[in-house]
Image (cartoon, rainbow, N blue to C red; front, side, top):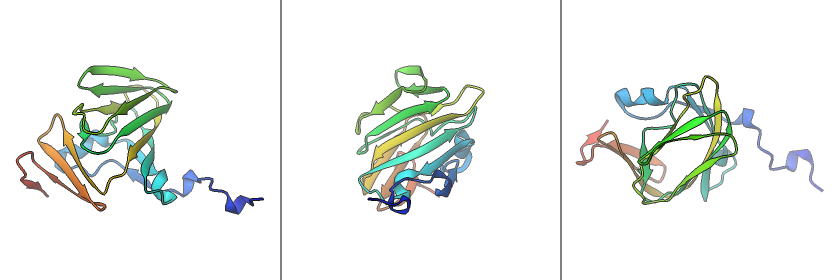
Amino acid sequence: MRSENDMPKIDYAAIETQYGSSYPGRLKKVCDGCERKNISGHVDLTQFGCNYTLLRPGAATSLRHWHEKEDELVIIFKGEVVLVDDYGETTLRPGESAGFKAGEPNGHQFINRANCDAILFEVGTRMTEETAHYSDEDLILRSKNGKFSFSRRDGTKIV
C-alpha cells in the first residue's frame, strides 16, 4: 500500500512559475500576463510536455505559430479564450479543446479577451529537435537538446 509520500501526486505550488515569453525584443509583450508551470518537467516526463497555463485578461499564450514535428493539444479548464488561427477566431470555454497536428502550417495562439483569468493545459510532443514558424512575424525558433535560438526566415540570427 502506498503512503502519501509515495504518491505521484503533483503539488502545483512546488512548481516554478515561468512568466511571459522568451521572444526577442518587442515581441515579448504579447505574452505579458501568461504564467506557465511545466508539470511534465517537474516529474521528469520525457515523452510529452504539459504546461498548466494561467492566462490573465488581455494576455496571449504565444505569437501565432506552428510546429514542424510536435503535435499540440490545448484543453480549457477555466474562463474563456479565443483561438486565433488561419481559419479565423473561435471561442473556447471550459471542457473544450483544440489540437494541432505537427507539420500542418496553421499558425495559432490563444488570447484571453475576457475580464477574468483563464486556465488551460497545453500538451505536446517533446522532440530533441524542433522548428517553429511564426505566421505573422519574420521569426523562426529552432531548438535542439533543450537549447533554442531565434532567427529570421532568411536564417539571420536574432540575438
